[in-house]
Length: 252
Length: 258
Image (cartoon, rainbow over all chains, first blue to last red):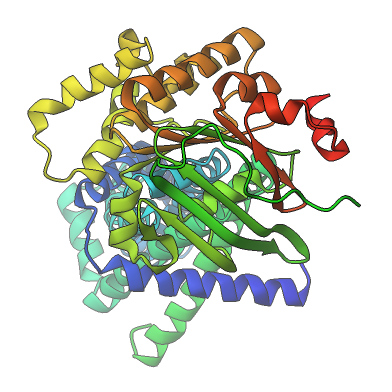
């Protein structure tokens, strides 16, 4: 992509974001569609996010155990795993899985609606398609990703407990106590807050790519693909900004 | 090059009929591609007018300008007494409830059943309609297109012709005064295409609707048109009843009727 095209794309995405804020908070509010999208985007992503969270917690524990044992620091595993999952691994892994599953499906869905004139049909049916399709989906991704991340964190920590007990014996109470002993609100809050931004970026980019899809069916594939690629990249950029900000606030 | 025909041609409709849709001196371009240039046309209540033109001549652009999906650069479009360019969102939505649009691709919502597809415009346009009437209105619209048994099917389960009929039922459910048909027979086999043509005529007779039909299918034009307008080089090159135009010697007109 040339520099001019990149700037034009960035400008268009900025205008799309401005339109979201301009139209999103004016009536008519599409509450039933928002709730339906929360169900589709949140509930139906749960198995994928749950499995990923479980594997993340298990692998992190099993791989760190030998190193920690070398230093006689096995008792620090719950604290280390807790901090790692809650501060970074949980939010970023969940966001990337979410971008792959939801970002691509939004891009493809809106893209195919665009090329088959369903978005135009919605407009002539007394509906503002931007509000009905874009605002509801972006709000749903923004609200659901933090919930999914918290669930993925919890599942990942439980998997870590299982992993520890595969080669030793630790009670759940001791495991949980160790995690909470090493955690502060400064660890939890920024991690949760940044997931709202991850969800917003994923929903917005998926919608933008799909809403302005063209070139027929080829464009639908491109919309789905670039929604995942761009939103994954933006998630990392937001993460980088978040770590700088928390550093400035003395929370790192 | 031959000079364009004067736009005021003898029509099949008596002059006393009320004009329900007027397009005056419309201009629309996409970059250097000047699609519509000084296009004018008037539709009278109860008549079917077909706009005939080659692919890419701007036929679909014309009806998208009429329904407000595209904005013209110059000219005036008056639908049911209202100048489209001056309407705000709410007023445009109210007008669109009276103007049905049958999309070329049917534009049925893939994620909804046939019943939900029909209910969508009903619930969005008629916010205060009694819910008890919904079922009856849906079934009436489906019976109009002889597909009452498909109410709970998904669009993907239907054939191309059935999808076209359902799209027409979705348009009819609001009992529009005007229906805009964008290439209603494109992509259909000849038998199904003729069924759609007859359906367009049936709708006209049963509900007294006015229709603007965009097509390049000559059988469709012959069967559905009270009047034909030829869109050539962005303007209304000639208009008149099918039989009259088909006998003209003008080479540009002969291209279509040969």
